[in-house]
Image (cartoon, rainbow, N blue to C red; front, side, top):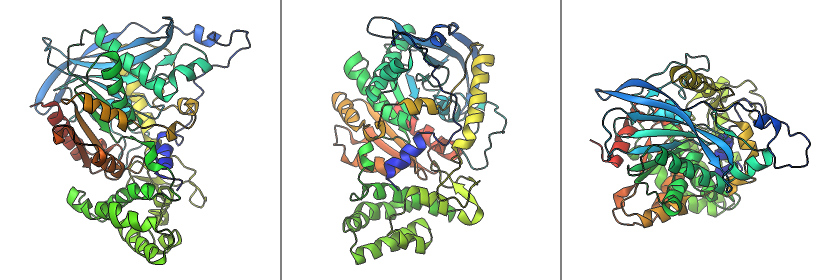
Length: 503
């Protein structure tokens, strides 16, 4: 393992998915390099916002709502439109309640559209993906989502530039400068939130921000940017399987942290294979060991007694072959763990949920050459369902490709972004400034792309600022997309309702 950071990056880079064509047209030779190329200039305009009336059912209630698909412009400092960001909004029908919240949702990547939170976790409709047995060829049929938040908040799902149908209107260099850098990404997305609120007359509404994975990094950073720069005070932040601090995963050659944060998720996967229920009680022993004796023994380096103890515990907790654990000195990296678990069956485990598997097309290769078992199955159903919903159901007729996951965006992202990002400081600042703001961080036990124990250690270091219950960490059975499991999605919905104070 290079580090937990490398594991998270491997997952978030989405390099395992089928690579799309470049999002950038070839730049013709011309004197003014900043001028938009012909392909961008000739893009047909986006259609006007489109709406449709829909119905869904949740918790015994019938909800009538309006779904809207539309776009908002991004302008530079001179007022020139340089991009168009597409959103999907769901607003409950009936008299406007000034106390009704609105929640803004972001996925991650970088390079992911918001479709995963929308059609998987919290939107009014869902399509099945992300669980063992799901297939790319499964029917992309939308059904009522029992985990939706629509009964207690309106929702706006935002696709960053280069994802979904959102697009840049400037050349490649300007696109990278304005949209594919860590700070610039936060600033323009915060402005999109502000502009949507103004356009829809919702500045007085309670506001929440939710983000998944790299979107979990975005959520507190956007919340603080709104609060400190744009004059918008979010009432709460929800981080789903977040990647919060790159510094957690560096320097694995001498720091115990990369190994410490991974071990509990490896143990959770092993417990689940043994049929043990995943709960705080089940996980207490390995969590205590990871932050105590394990970390101390790792710091002792090659000390024979310490290595022997590490090997013994890691073998017991992970279920990996003892001979291999001894060979690796108890430092079992994520890639090895995922390949070795099911090697005798010719299958691979997913970094997103190590109990979700697929056949390995190259079982004798030294390194994994196959798509991640989950990533390989989510592109088709989410893309098909979302494009049909937007263009057919809602009637937002648009030309162009829809990018549920864009390798091109990720490849164009700021160099070494994965060594730079951390939004824990933004989270601390926002909490300190607003004693009423609430925070919920949620994970799946089996996730090795963004392990829950990293967030556990981070939260334990945040000083108590007022009510200790306003920053909560909840862990559910499942992986990165734990909401693909009905029981975990139900528990997630319950915990979010409590954060909102919804009955």
